[in-house]
Image 1 (spheres, rainbow, N blue to C red):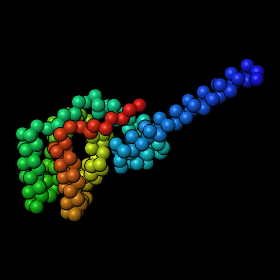
Image 2 (cartoon, rainbow, N blue to C red):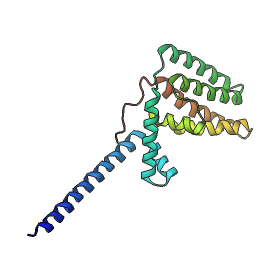
Image 3 (cartoon, helix red, strand yellow):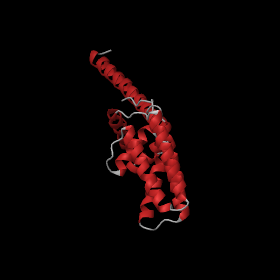
Length: 186
């Protein structure tokens, strides 16, 4: 066998091995992201139109939130926020519009106490999705209803649904002892 042919064959085999390793690593990364983000992974693919850009965006979210040093609430904070939530829920019967506004503000206060930055809503939702991927859609739905409530376009049933959505996120935020431990590896 000619030495040139042997070198070409070796290069081709090494390239095939490298391609196989790259594909396996990419599949593993995709599986890790899908497992960690759950429904938020599918939402990101819908938003970005393809797995590659969606996965890059989700990885960037994870890296951003990792730098934020999100902290669990103390027992005293959890107790205080739970009492405030009870007051908000009690107010809903007599003043649902006001209760929706207070629920939104309470969620923001809890997020801020945990260490989430209070930028625009989309950034807050993206940040929360890293540690709370299964309830962030509740936050989006509640926030949308709160906006309609401010415009006078939400029914009482809509506002009730907003409270249910806020409650799902609230419970997850105050009960979380530590941020999610699943780490996305590059």
